[in-house]
Length: 426
Image 1 (spheres, rainbow, N blue to C red):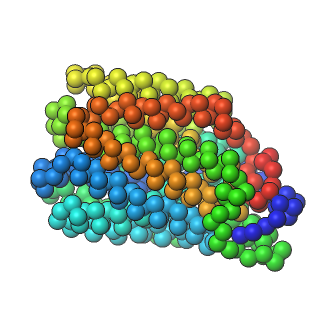
Image 2: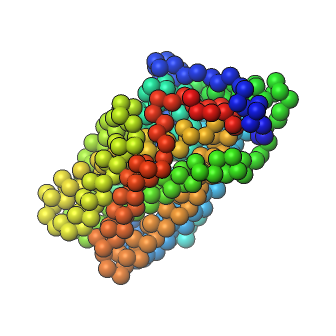
Image 3: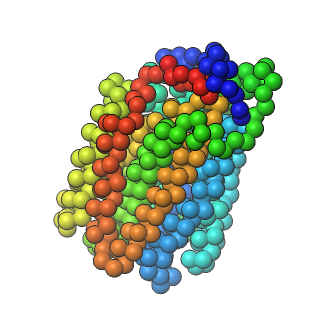
């Protein structure tokens, strides 16, 4: 997808409105649901981990291995689907990803042991991991400039909504039909593909870039090295943002159910209830942090969430009282998840439309690849000691987000996106 700096700099960008339109709101709603169903699928294994450890007679380290390896295999989708989005369009890439993870989630319900669970969950993870960056790119390109941070926060707000849906579903269907029923319900998001086909068109920015390149006689080509070659500093910052956020989140989300249900002896029902409430409150945390970032900028808002969140994460490992665990866990989850959406969304704003998908996919792949060690590492620590002993490591990762945004990541608040390589940020 080569275009010279001179050509890119001279191109007329697509200006974003400061107002919401029916199209931009529909895109956001569809992508929120896509992310919600995405995290529903990813949450199933986390919730059923205590059940599988007991039913299959395996150790926490084995489940940590399954979770980490499936995420490493899922890196294929993290990289490939955004590249497809640059080559063939955001809309078809989104459709392929959602349809893929719906089908493979249903198949995971037929797992008979940790080996088959690893195989099916890995195939599911390829499509799941591909949907995340594509949806984020599409919302970034269609949301109003003034409210882009809020939109990106709301987009990833689909995460706690999906987590809550899975927790509530677990409370109802697991006692009646067992853990496999959660996977079979995961086939339903395939219906979302019909809405995408009917409800939204291609990203106007993507169509503008494609038209401009065709007009100048340029073809879209696979150039996976373009982001690193043209924007090395931005690629490093984006990769670190993904790593710090995802290392904390993957370790926290993978082992918090086991920590509450087994280590703190709260049981499956109480654990599911706690997580459902936490994730319901977190829905508002995403929108709230995104709104704050649109008003005051990410440079100070993101650290205001990261620093106290990391402190509470360490403190939580020393609590035994059920009431204290609930309230401290609620606040910790609010801070971790709240800054997640607009924090990760930053990575899509610093690259031009021409290579946005490839850049986001590449940095996402680098960050997620290293962050995927978190469930495995915490699993080792839990086997040797306890999950509580691993919480300071997750806290350190979350804390490091603060200096990254304060001193190194240029604030993109209310700045116009660029479309072509070499074009200066407005």
